[in-house]
Length: 131
Image 1 (spheres, helix red, strand yellow):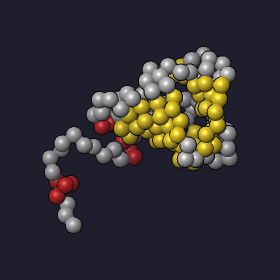
Image 2 (cartoon, rainbow, N blue to C red):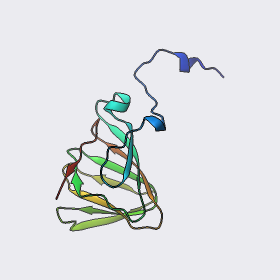
Image 3 (cartoon, rainbow, N blue to C red):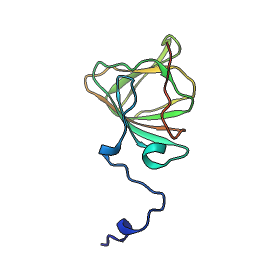
């Protein structure tokens, strides 16, 4: 075993350890962006780990880019539309795709926190509150 790769010059790759993740969601949920422009120098994508606490619901919002979500644990209801007129329930091992510009919010409908990973077609989080 060798430690050589650890000592090689930086080639653009990056590890973002938990203390360096950012949570700027402002949505009533925890969202830590591990990969983004500001954390890793990404130019086209971002990834985050998030938690929706028991009983929590995020504010209705939209993003100007596509979002893909993988649910690690828990049960959530994803609402869509200007008045939450459509919804789907998701749970552990489900993937959810949200197109750009679609108003949405997320509610924890289970008895444990919802843990998820999301990937976006954008290097930084942009949240547009929809009232």
